[in-house]
Length: 471
Image 1: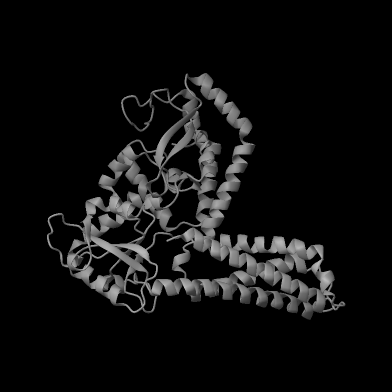
Image 2: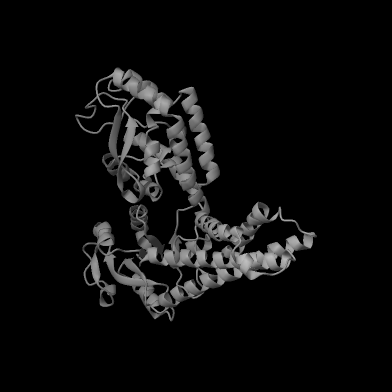
């Protein structure tokens, strides 16, 4: 589905409603609250009105963007969205009041209260109604199967047949546009679900099927005695930007894993590993951009000195680039100051070790102080990385890690980082086993991600750089 078009609808409506709300409030404020002669023509030509009609909608747009109001637009709940709009409007109006309206002369405090309540009422009413209208039209199309999410069922036996029938017989669709199913057993012939929907292949072809058919949701509906297969499937799917759902059993229900998203919906567990709220993710990206720009600009004299030291220390280029695997398994080129001799891996990929003869004298200092990582702030600006996140690895080593720890793919649901809790606690890994040992710290970080945790990791990283005690 065209999410960009839908997002644009929300942005245009929000901008338009904010413009109308501010214009209406400005006229009310000048004509009623100021107790002056009401001359509409003079008010409409007021430069402050024109400035506000440009600045105020932009303020609201930024606030909505930071709160994640324009993400996942096809899965919005009208009730939840109205509640979020209420809270955002409340805090936004308070910010506008203390920034623009507090200095207005008013004969009594009651006038201030009228000013706040009027602006809140106008803005919330217009914004909530416009959003409710857009979301309702979208919900109508989803419920009536006019649009839907390309969905794949994994499984072919009783559970798969049961969930398919349940979804198809629902009077109001949940948005699943089921294209077919895949089996987990290559030897399985004439599965029960084949009578209802096409058989698209086997689980070994899962990634190719998802890419070719542009799958947006996957429902894992394999039998209870195949729990190990469920774990491996989830591990494989976790680095894909798709919605993963499973059929709960009694144990899941008793443990509280089943969350009710829709009163009339089917009983499915939506797997989500995202502990960070949308507003924090937006703030994190804003911080990444500001912090990286600052580090790159202020550190320019230092980088020139490092570049000279690298060039004088050994023959070869100043910078070292290498392909790493990032968000959702997408490769990118990471950049560092070179710390090894040229052709250090002429015999194949190899991790550095203690007293590694390939590391130059300058490189040894850069590694201990983590200064070799600083060019990666350019990767952050490009959007390949974040300041804080699991360290990106090469595909060569990821393939080895996932043979022993399939849950490594869990890390690829977020952008990799320049520093991480695993890097702070463990440092550089010298072999695959150490990479797996370090993995547990990054997995714990994933389940506890927040801006506060990121700031703590940054502080500890700064201390490592200052004290040159990196491993």
